[in-house]
Every structure is written in C-alpha cells, then in structure tokens.
Amino acid sequence: MTTRRILIFNLSFWLVAAVVLFVNAWPNAQHHMDVAIARYIYFVIIGLLITSALTLVYDSRWFRRSAYRLSRAILFSSVAALLTALIVNPLTYLMVGADIRTVPYEILSTGTLYFALFYVVWSALFFQLHGQSILHNTIPKPPQSSLVFKVERKGAKHLLHDRDICCVSASGDYVELVTAANRYLQKDTLTNLEGQLDKSRFKRVHRSTIVNADKIESVVPRSGGAFEITLEGGHVVQSSRAYKVVVEDILPRA
Image (cartoon, rainbow, N blue to C red; front, side, top):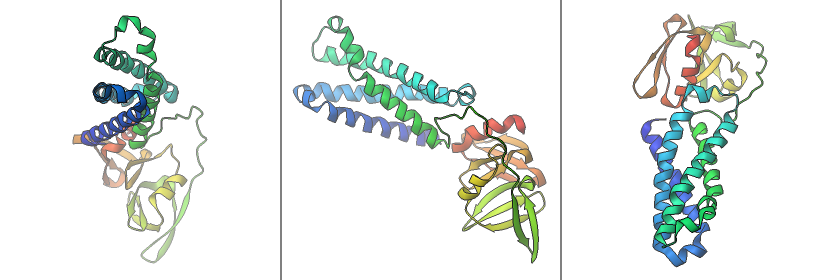
C-alpha cells in the first residue's frame, strides 16, 4: 500500500471507530455533548498516532518472521489501548471538571476494552490490506507435489513442469506461464492457479503476477516500496508496494 492509501485507511478506520463509540455512549453523551465530541476527536488523533507507530512495528522483519504473530498483535493492541485510555480518559474527566486523582480506576477502565478491540481489528485489516494474515502457521506444511501443465505452442503440445516456470501473469481470461525460453497461455485465473502452486516457491508480488523464487536472479528496489525483479531468461517483472513484505521475505533466496 502507498503512504496515501495507508493514511486514508487509518483515518477512515478511526473516524468509524469514533462514531461507533459515540453512539454507544449516547445516553451519557447527551449531558455533555461538547465534551463527548472533543473526547472522540482526541480519540481519532491518538489512534492515528499510535497506529502509525504500530505500522513500523508490523512492517519490521522481526515481527513478520515471528511464529506468534497473533499473540504479539494482541499484546501490542492491549498496550496501545492502555496508552489511549491513559490519555483520552484524563482529558475527558478534566473537561467535565472532575478531579482525576479521585477516579484512578475509571481512568483505566472507561472504554479500554473497546479500545483494545478496535486495535485488534485494525491490526487484522492492516495485514489483509498488505496481502498477509494476522495468523501465522507455526507448523511447516509439507511441500506440494510437482504440477504438470498440458500446454500448446505453435500447434505442438508439451508437458510443462511447475519447476520450469519463472513467473505467471494474468492475461484477460487466461494466465501466461513464462519459462526462461517460452510463454504459454492457459485458460485459468491467477487466483485459482495460485492455490495449486507450491507456496514455498511461488510468491505473489503483484495483483497480476506470481514469481518462482527459485528463478530470481536479482531484485532492485524502486521508489514507493516497489521492486524490479529479474528472472531466468532475462524476464523482468515489477512488484507493487502492497506486496513489499512478500518480496523482502524472499530476498535472501535471490
């Protein structure tokens, strides 16, 4: 995702979250409407700041390679919720003229569970928008058996093993299977083919492109978080920012 799309996602998420909390607190909010509005404006601002920090954590190689991604995301979400409560709730009590020294429990408890839930939901959506999952499979899957495709080129029929494929790209109602020397069209969808290929070798690096990590010869970073990937046979493909994490994970194999 580009920085602009991340900003739009974050702003949209926290505005919706603020509206949900405001509606939930409506019976009490009616008595201090100005305070309620100010409270959730602060909530949006703090949510944006904290998730900006979480973005850096979630994008780090340390976090992506963790075998306990979900539990760590819940832990960070809980800490983020506690920080939010420690900032938003005292401000709210001060605005209604309460002495915050007399209500320490309420400062921590008011809305903290809701805050934690929103941070967990934000984390799950963040990974989905980056083509990832908040879940992490700790048990390695056995390698899939080799796939063999029946392809045709210039009237001649061939058997094409998946190990010989450099990349696969979408081409209308077809997919193009690219080897070091040739290209073959196959009636299929990229999503369907992705489900059949060995995920330990075949990585989606663009909405319309899958590459065989074993065929990568070089990877060159480009602006905006994209990469230029050169494969066997001199084929060059471009990754997109949304799949930056995927490309970085296969760099050691390049």
